[in-house]
Image (cartoon, rainbow, N blue to C red):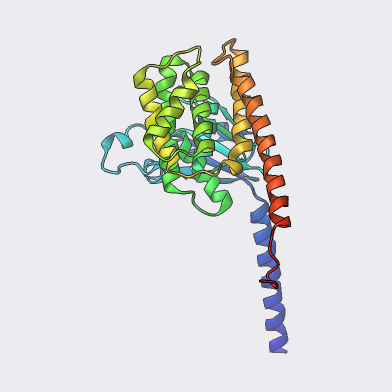
Amino acid sequence: MKKRIISTLTLFIFIFSGFTLNVQAENKERVTFGTDLTDAQEQEMLKGFGVSSDNVSIDRITNEDIIKQLGLDPNDKSNYQGGCYSSSYVKLKNDNGIVVDAKNLTEVTGLMLSNALLTSGVTNAEVKASSPFPVTGTSALSGILKGFEAIQGKELSLKNKKTAQKEIETTSTLADEIGFDEAAAVINDVKTAVIKKAPKTEEEVSSIVQDVTKDYKIPLSDTQKENVTNLMVDIKDLNIDYSKVKDTLNNLTDQLSTALDKAGTQLSDSGFFQKALDGIGDFLSGIGDWFKSLASKDSAVDPHYT
């Protein structure tokens, strides 16, 4: 009788545990609050995100979390200045790239965050980043990444996250000089080329930066190109697989093109045609690989006859 009761309890625990794991696996949403928000401000953020505390998991992020998340220097006092107010909602998706809606962030846009998230290792996500009042948003990435890592149950590469934060800073500086969407488009264009061509040296990276930006209607200064090159050298070292992020990069390019069109600006005359040519090149390359695979199969030697 005792053995039967124990067996029943064990079975019940196993079933319940499986149910709990399934529920957690299906919970692909997360909210992260800056730790200095009041209760009323947290409720305001939840309302803006369109969720409630009853149906979404919530984390809070401190200065210490930001420093650890982005690999910042814990001895640098400037990393502790100000309170933590930036908050985010993250929903993991299976496709359709990265879409970020940013509000009350004065130095960072949704498209800049989308770019940085791809560098961090995120490929498909819906994100909302906001604050109850205007803040710079330069550390908003850390809260988003914390939410994403909580959903997937493992941490992203610290090297990727540090590079992504450097990307935010580089893009923000460039945005002060040429415009937010224009800066995000520059970084996206050059990063796409760097990931696709996989350069081996800094000189090769510099050459890519020169080639991509030479026909821009907004000419970049030597200093701006140098800053972009320094960032892209770090991105090169991440060895991002182009085949795994191609769709996300194309999606971001489309978002940026739409944003620039709405603003009545154009970064380059050849952007659309270059994308079309790249697509034709990928198609022809795929056909060539297919024929090569057929030829290799026909010429393969039967291992039983040597």
